Amino acid sequence: MIRQFLVWLQDQLGKGAGDTAQSWSQDLLGSLNFWGLIEGTHLLSLMLFAGTILFVDLRLLGFTLQRTPVSVVSRRILPLTLAGFGLMVVTGLALFYAKPLFYYHNIWFRAKLLFLVLALINIVIFHLRAHRNQDAWDKMPRPPTATRVLAALSLLSWLLVITMGRFMAYSWFDCGKPIPHWVNVVQECQASEHGAVDAADIAAIGGKAP
Amino acid sequence: MTKLNLAPFVLGAALLSAAVLGVQSAQAHHAFAAEFDAKSPVLLRGKVNKVEWINPHAWVHLMAAGPDGQVREWMVEGGTPNTLLRSGIDRNTLKPGTEIIVRGYQSKDKACAPVCKANGRDVAFPDGRKVFMGSSGTGAPKDGADPNDK
Image (cartoon, rainbow over all chains, first blue to last red; front, side, top):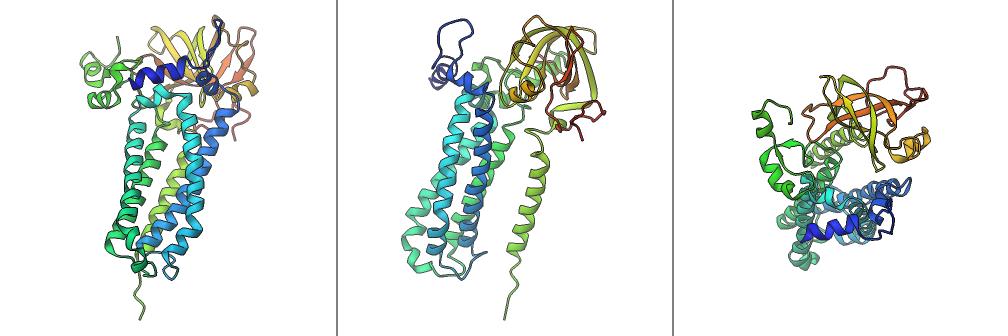
């Protein structure tokens, strides 16, 4: 279902007539400047996003800006975080659009989405739990344990999102390469256009592909 | 009474080391050494099958004999389409069927599955013209041949 939609998105949407016609997705991937601009913007806004959320989380952990109430830190810094996040989502979607099937069958991308969802769930929990009685600990140099745990989880999940994103640039586990069986399963390589090749099978026939 | 809080320093040190590692790997889109073997130079001679003009790296596909003498399909990594255009390679100079000689380095995994992979250093055309196809500073061995390599 999802895969079929992505095939259409990558190969069909925006495709004109003629032998050399390309879809919009393929045009974007092959563009001389646009793709690089989007990728550059994605990485630069990461600094704005991650750099500012770091300060908020460190304040919640009680490590920095201890004399400034949490509400003041949030009011000043979170708009910047949101702006960074908005840019990341827009440019991230565009980068995904340029190569949807590659990312769909990519273990790093799947892990990144997983940690992204965990980070977002963490935000919801923060608002339902810690945020409700914020008046009680707003001025504390070191907020209560529950709040600090949520801040640590936030920091950890965003660091993992970023790390997984970084590893997407490497092709060690691309579908079609001899890779461990479980990676083939996680990436659903069998359904990909490159198929699934188990490293163990290749080793069994002497290390070279037929 | 001041109690020395070590946590910020520990965290700071961790972030600093992460930043140093990050800078090292950010010198290129991906580090040459992560995927390619500087000790496995290859010289590939054959006709262009197809060229994928895609970001962040273009791929030139050709049928050529590898180090073992067997003719297989090779895909050779170049710079971005923009980098290639600026060094003088475009859709018209690298049409399917063009006879080329590519110098490069084979991937670390030499399984050749699904096809053999290499990082392209330069490409020579039938008329003798030779152009660089990698983006400079990818970590490929410096042999002085690339005027942009410092």
